Image (tube, rainbow, N blue to C red; front, side, top):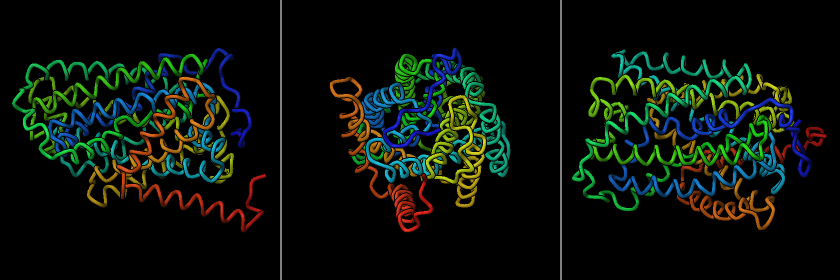
Length: 433
């Protein structure tokens, strides 16, 4: 059962000899972070910032270090299915925790249509399928990850290990074949859109480095959270940072000003440098990314949904499976409904993915800001985790300013959380006992 404010976290599976190990943990973290951004962000960032998009990647990598480290410290010390929302509850109270939970459950889920449509676009481009099939393919891509997670996070973890291994191997192949084709001339002018373009690219790349919070929701499923989570986070940070930086360099160096053209920029890069095997490799990457990222995130969505239900922030019907080792099937079904709804809106409105990326990232930034403030308040003083939390809190608040008007969806969800609090005060019978 999810804990109330100030209570001890739920019992972990640690010590029972079961649960997620280091290999599975690394795979889940890498998949959560090294995800759909591979397919679209190098091109989008190059389009808005030119060669200076490389600076944006470096900035976000630097930002990711304290963020990832703080989440690792929180997850290792307070294993809880509520994740960031549970830390916010400890530090800032139930209304802020409810808003944080809603940001993840109903805001971050705006990423589902991005994954599904990107995967469908790549399939159509590589196999010559008419783009009229994109809606059906996108819906089909949603189904397998939900089916796997219905079997439990441990099964999903081993599936993720296989998918992530294939993903890393193919990324190495694409980068290795593209590096010899890079041209120094394509890095001039370095700042074609000024520093404002770099700021926009940073906002986009928050999508790429979002995902560290996923481990907080499944921390209770690790065999030994205090040992495994920090190691898995460190390995994942090195792998994902290197992959995004190298991909941005080769995207700019090979494609130049044309990097942002077309819906499948990574396919353009692969076709330019390896016309035989490149497109096939990218097709495999697209499939792995679309399935793998959903698989990794759904473990978090399910546990959080059940946790929110156990605290009364969602209907109690969805709380089943909140305990360590439990499978939150009802909460997963709720997430599936939300994902399908977002996909429907995306398809009806023309499938403009940048809008959904920005909705997703603005909610992530809100979660990160709340989580880092909570971390400063609840992590022990004079520890590395708290020191990183202080740095990450400042950086996250800066990202809030950078997000600007894109924070409107997050503000609406926060208003909904406040509305629930007001309703409970007006209707005492609605309060949780």
